[in-house]
Image (tube, rainbow, N blue to C red):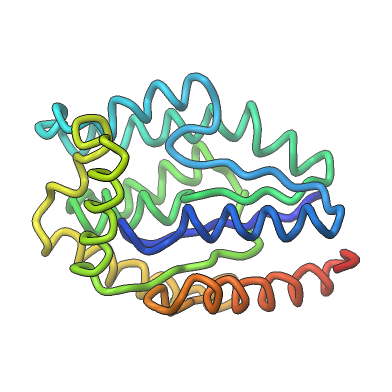
Length: 218
């Protein structure tokens, strides 16, 4: 069995940068690793991602979001994550089921019991070995994310969540911190406002310790 590491956090917290850096660091140690993301990770998931993130879909119902994210996750598990873990690969995933709890549950107000039931039904007992939460204030994260989207010219195709009210993002951030308090055995919280290199060094130290405990040569 491989090792499953998930990166979580609000928009603009630095997940995408840090997951890429960790992937490179592990490859340099000749460890088997793949980097993937949600929504996405498969051709079907990537098509669902376009629907979920496109700015023209601002009127999408929260329940529709929940079903689409779940559909993408089921395909992701069947096609990529589960086979990779069974092959002994270290899987680095940008978001997983905690994002659904934070965004659709705490953010949008969908019944948490329903979300948990869907997790049990479709994700079964797969829980990340390590969840790295990059925490930063909502205003700071949104500023970063909006700047990136504008820089890359993706305002129309990736800007839906950035247009939501600041209070939505505050609820999501607080939800993540609450999840970390509830599950300290698998959460590692990092201050995402630090310089990129400092965050990377802290993540590498935590990951290396966990991997050594599992018998990996790091």
